[in-house]
Structures are given as C-alpha cells and as structure tokens.
Length: 211
Image (cartoon, rainbow, N blue to C red; front, side):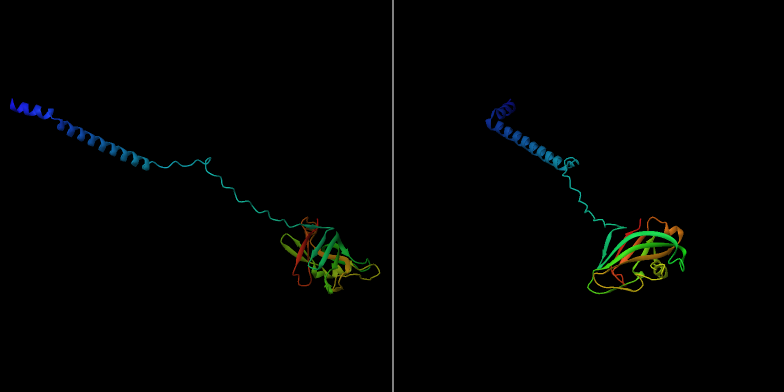
C-alpha cells in the first residue's frame, strides 16, 4: 500500500507534469527542426529549371556587311585606268586584215577590236599594242603586233595610229584597231575580256567584257 501511495503521490505532484510538458515540447521542436533541414536539403538538391528557348532573350544575328560589287565594263563604256581612258567601240572577226593588195593572214582567226585611248596625264605616254591583253578561261592572250599594224593600214598603204610605240601627248586621244590571233573556238567564246592598263608596266588594270 505504501508503494502505491508513493506512485500516486508522484503523479499528483504539479512539478511532475511540468517536467513532462517540457520534455514533450523539446521533442516536438527537435522534430520540427529536422523537418526544416530535410526540406531545405531537398530544395537545394532539386535541379534548376532550364529556360525554354521561348523565354530566353533572342540574340540578334550579326548583320552581314554588304560587299560592294565591282561594276563590270562593256562595249561602249568609258573605262578610266589611272590617267588613261579607254573605250571599246566594237569587235569583229576576220581571217585576214590590211589592204587587199598585201593582207596579213591569221593562223587561226583574227579578233579585231576597234577602240580609242585618251591620255589624261600631264606627260606624254607611249601607247603600244602590248597595253592590251585578252582573257579567257584562265588564259591570257597577247595582241598580234603585225596584225594590229596591218589592220590600221588603208588601201593606199598609209598607217594611222598603228598602236606600235605611238606617242600620245597629254589631253590627246587616238583611235584604231587591236588584233588578236585566236583559235576558232576561242574567238567565238562569250566570256572574252579585254584587259587594259595604265602604261607599259601595267601598274593598274581593268577588264572590259566583249559580249
């Protein structure tokens, strides 16, 4: 009986119940802290959501710089090369050139280019058929000096502007014919180009399409 009374008396003590409440509260708060830690760890462990292409800021593609296309010259155009000015008037083909009494025959077929040249420099320039070259299919063709001289010879035998070491003073212009001896296939090509230059050394050049 004494033991039962002792046990009952303990449960009836107010301070006993205070200790019990404090212990329960401590256990509960400890569990709450553990839950918070677990929640924080889960939040940090979750991978970040990747932004969809629609939400990402679109970067403007770099604008391509427009390249200035070089103007192509043709028959009838005035072409300035340094201090020299060239104009191709026309082109023809022939098997021979020169006066009928003493013509010059082509090995293949002649391409005859009628043109004019003006000297805009402040000194005399020696104009020669070597100023002119023909371009086709990656190949370079030289002018025929004898054919060019003959093509500029009249029926009376006089030669005007032969394009053979002709002296051209400042502000003067001369016209005549330049001749190329070519194969029949080349002379009829549609992509022939005449190269003209500043002088004997050709420090500057331009191309004229002979279409």
